[in-house]
Image 1: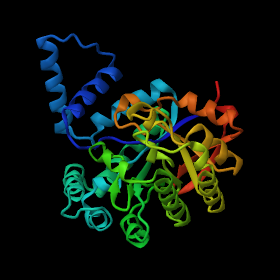
Image 2: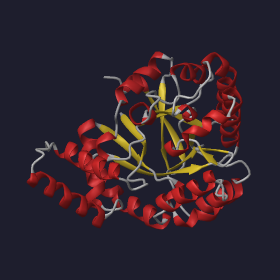
Image 3: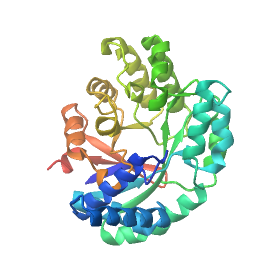
Image 4: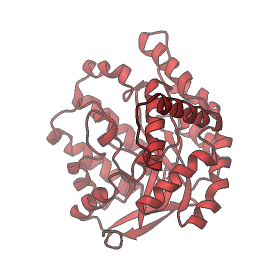
Length: 335
């Protein structure tokens, strides 16, 4: 059984790249080849206009994900959205992000305004409304959320999530003391840090997330490497071991997430090969994730992920439903 538990429907900022990726994704799913003619660009303009009019919480858009899931043989698909997309969470992010009057703060406040465009109620209602249709097609659709964790914000986060019945909750760390380190416009800030100290700080936050009792699994554990700023990996092994110990002790799973592999400069999955080995030695549980933001990328590298886990002695992957975790033997999903 193939699964993908980390899939997004949309994300800002809304640049020309968003237009291009949207059209490329639809054409890929539908098997349409661009002709670069006047008619072709008019077709693309009409298609993009339809996409924006219908929105990402539309059956028209989600059907493309279903079509690709069927093509790739996925049996369980988890749709999530970033917590920072939801207007109800604004005060939470304003409190823990750096939104001061500095250059960093002004850029991050602008970014938050660009991406915080949706309502959580709309997301939950829409995904739940599509589960029956997906079931009839032979794919189980799961409702998740990816929630940014901030030390000290546990109770506020719980209160934001409490009204909803998710199948699973992903914990993620995208900020270091208020700095969104995966924002390409803010990449130069890495040069201000001793990298070992920075990674120590990051993994301490990951450990606190694992200990919080909020999350079904923690996403992309070493995503701090996004722009390839990292020390010699040998220096990180003790940190890997501390993270693995915390996940195992608190019975919190993680994922092999290939988002950085095909979308960011580091060109490597999270966790790294060496990190996966350490995690497997502590019997940490894994699920498989594409971190796709467009329909054509769901399930990407899924076979490679499972083979990688198998080579590291991982015998099963985990899936989630109604906040309960189940295991599926890897030997039953390797072709």
